[in-house]
Image 1 (cartoon, each protein chain N blue to C red):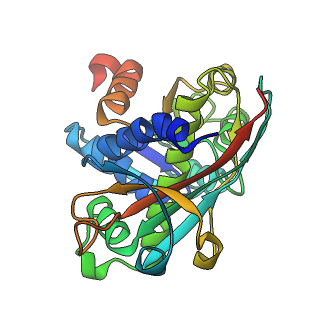
Image 2 (image 1 turned 30 degrees about the vertical axis):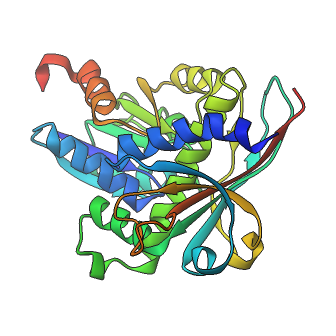
Length: 161
Length: 124
C-alpha cells in the first residue's frame, strides 16, 4: 500500500484520537525516515493485530514512536500530576494505551466493515525502527523543537482483500 | 453511587474517573487492572456500575461479565464495556453476553455520559 493511501486514513484516525482524548489537534507533516534525534529520544511501542472472523486477510503490525516530552505531557494531563513527577512507567502506560486506541481507529478507517481483534501493545527496542518510514505528526507542546515531529506511526499492515 | 472502573491502563482508569467527575455525579470509585481483580473488589465494594475495558491480561471484560452472572449480589450489576476494537460482531457479542453498553475508544466524555444516563436515567 502506498504511503499516500496510508496517510488518507491514518491522518483522520490519529487526529480523532488526539482530539477526543488528549484535547489537541496534531498536524500531519508527511512521512519520514525515523533516524537520529527523532528515534533516539523516543519511546517506541507496537501493536500486533490478529485476525478473528474477518472478511479479509489481515497481517502485520502498527508501531508508534512518540517523543518522551509528548508522552510526559500526556501522562501529566491524564493523572493529573506535575510533568516532573511523571515516571517512565506512567509514560509507557500512556503510549501503550495510545497505541491500542490508534490501532483500532486506523483499522476502522482503513477497513470499516472488517471484523478484527488485536493484541496488547508491547514495548520494543528503538533500534528496530531505525531507518523505517513513519507518518509524522507535529503535536503542540510535544517537542522542545517545535519543528520536530513528536509522534510517528509506522503502519505495516497488509490485507489480501 | 459506587462505580468500579476496570482497565489495565492506569491512564484510562484516570480518564474515566475524571470524566465521571466532570459529570457532577456524587460517586465513590474503585479501580481494578483486570477482570480477576475486579471480581475480588466487586465482592467487597458492591458497585452500582462497572465500567470495564474489553482487552485485558489475566481476564478480559467479556469473561468478567460471564463470571459476574454466577455471583449472587453481583449478577445484575450494570456493565459498560469500552474497547479500541471497532467491530460490529464483537460489540454485538459483548451486548449479548450482558453488557448494557459498548463504547468505542477513544472514549469521548459525551459517549460515556450518554451511556451512564441510559442506565440510570433520572435517578442520577
